[in-house]
Amino acid sequence: MKKKVALGIDIGGTNTTLGLADEQGQCFDDESFPTWAHQSFARFFERLAEKIDAALARSLQEYELIGIGVAAPAGNYYQGTIDAPSNFCWGKVELVRLMTEHYHLPVAITNDANAAALGEMMYGQAKGVQNFIVVTLGTGLGSGIVVNGNLIYGHGGLAGELGHTIIEPGGRQCGCGRHGCLEMYVSSRGICRTVFELLAQRLDDSELRQISFNELTAEKVYASAQRDDPLARAAFEYTGRILGRALADAVACFGPEVIILFGGLAKAGPLLFAPVQRHFEDNLLHVYKGKVKIIPSIVSKCSIAVLGACALIQKEIEKTNRAV
Image (cartoon, rainbow, N blue to C red; front, side):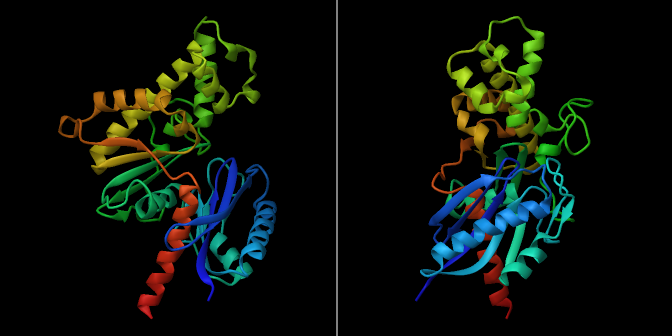
């Protein structure tokens, strides 16, 4: 008898990852490819289908695919759509309908950070935790918020976007069309913009002065900070201050027990976590001081968002079976 598995897809602003997982969260046959968000969705879907078909051809002699879960920025759980994400040129896409027609399987979608929250709740740091926030730090900043054991979706299915809370009125322009959104300051793109502002404001010697804006990456900022570059370290300090203050405000609204940071920028470790923790505690309401943990995601074998997407479709199938 074949083992039942789900396919999870995590569509990111830089890379898209997909993988198969069973009900115990054992993930395998995962791989990534560039999203190329500047290209049309039709072209992306062609490339995605090629990757899915190849994965299924490798695996389905041994496993039975029960459904497909998708994590995507601006993924609308209720509508089954991707609703014009700010860092993409796709507009609104009826992804669930397209995937269902193509693969004739149950398909569900949610916001990428919501999927990460599901993954943490099922298989990661939030097992047994009823109130927590997952913050994904990648090309942008996403967040999945769980209150009393339930993900917050809101009226239209798109609630919980801490990345689009304005922390600097009239500040940096965001892809959403507004100015001063949190993700313009705390993300891989945000820290690069911070570096160039610091380069203009300060006269410190820095190896980052030799890198053009288009060539600078968060990884290069991290590498320079590891070599004690003063501007790189200042960029992490500034990023940590902004994020710490924003998370303190989120605690006042949602009262989480723990906040989990996930994604490329979170891999900077103490360079990011130390200033985040310091500014977080400095700005917390007194009733929460010393009571809320900020920790990294520990799932490494497979993307936590991929695992969450698998968990999403598994839960949807269970819900349908109970209703029959």
